[in-house]
Amino acid sequence: MDQHGPGGPAGERGAGHPGRIGAYRLLARLGAGGMGEVHLARSDRGRTVAVKLVREELAQQEEFRARFRQEVENARRVGGDWTAPVLDADTEAPVPWVATGYVAGPSLQQVVGHDHGALPERSVRILAAGLAHALKDIHAAGIVHRDLKPSNVLVTIDGPRVIDFGIARAMETVTDGGLTRTGALVGSPGFMAPEQVRGDRITPACDVFCLGSVLAYAATGELPFGTANSGVHALMFRIAEVGFLLG
Image (tube, rainbow, N blue to C red; front, side, top):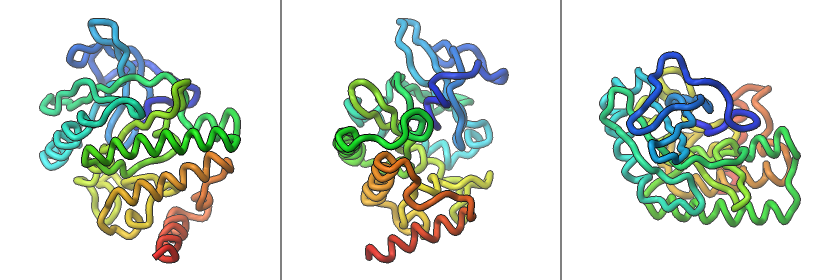
């Protein structure tokens, strides 16, 4: 789930959600994804956070809830230097939620795809170093991101920040043949690793492949494997073919 819509925070609180979750007052809806919604919120002490609320149908599945519980615990161990740190969570609530530090900055997708186009070489090098540090921290905590893509990279004055690490693994509990039970792909087709496309075992190497795809997008302004205009299956075939060529 992206922290931001185009241009940053947008939207009002969803009508179906209370004004408070735990110790946080919900201020605005920032976005939504396969797992649920993300809201801008503020703690009683005035700290601004991003609160992710799990969809009701997922919360009713014990397998998902157990995986989500484990992933939240893993994510707590990741430092916040290059990521949005996990600050609080309630995985047992009727609507499970997790609060992360709010990162003030547009996504890489917004910067490249809408605002400025391809980044200059020096900016790409700085981006690469920051994302490598983020993945090092994430992998050291025993997590594989599984969905590293431009919309999950936020650009700040202090460097890039990675969000939503570990979420895709929880979503894998509700998959059937590569699709979730609601028909959504686990991962983003244009930025998936060959192992994800083939349904093979997921390792940290998958994130490294996706890192290369993200950097190629940042450097060129073009999707590395083309668009899905010719069909998602054709796009995924191109990714799998690259994996075959790489051995």
